[in-house]
Image (cartoon, rainbow, N blue to C red):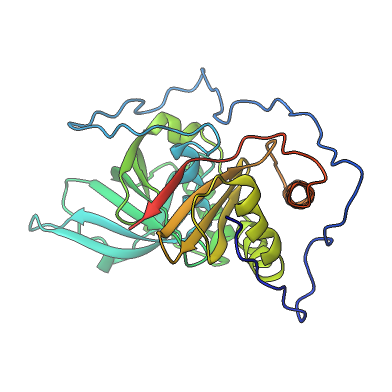
Length: 316
């Protein structure tokens, strides 16, 4: 059943050119991109394996970024988290902290005397959340030892990272790092998590669209709702009526949508891009191409030459 579409608000100038009929939508052939994890055989990590008593086994989709990449993206975009340690009396203590990250994703903290109430056991965790357009909150928890760098050159580098992130000077004697042992990555609240090894975390790239993903999603949700609704009708295999659809997030491999149905409830669906994108221009161009193709299929200009998405996740 076709999705009920909503009229575009005339007071908003559309971010993308309006759809119009053309003879045939042209897509460039898929490009072979390197595997998203850097290969660094010459570098030996402090930890390359994490063991869990009851490991979580999740089926990873080839059309979604790997959990290690998602964790690196969260750490790059967020700057606030909760650091939990054991205090000198043996009680767990969690405090809010700001952090920066080095090129391998290692968290860099600035802890004053009142924050340094931990015991000689330096095991700690740093929990970080990233709200995505008010619809989803992916999060990661980094476990590792809270260390105090002693090398002056290392401290100067970490000082530069902090100044670049927050635009302020910091006393190098207050700088600490969390030496990553393993990472627990969750897609949202009430979701199952998956453990990421320190090696995979350090070698993963943050998503290349991260710095403008939220802005792009908000623009599309505001100015191109007709296209968003059409995506549901054309690219998703639905057997129920949807009253509203919104984009949640976009990354190099595709975008996530939240669907609202009066009869069935709330669902989340992943729509992959026809090819990987690596910058803002490529993302907008791909959205334009997909909008054009969806319009042509809807108007019966040609039959769909793609497989519809069948996997939907119901949101409790």
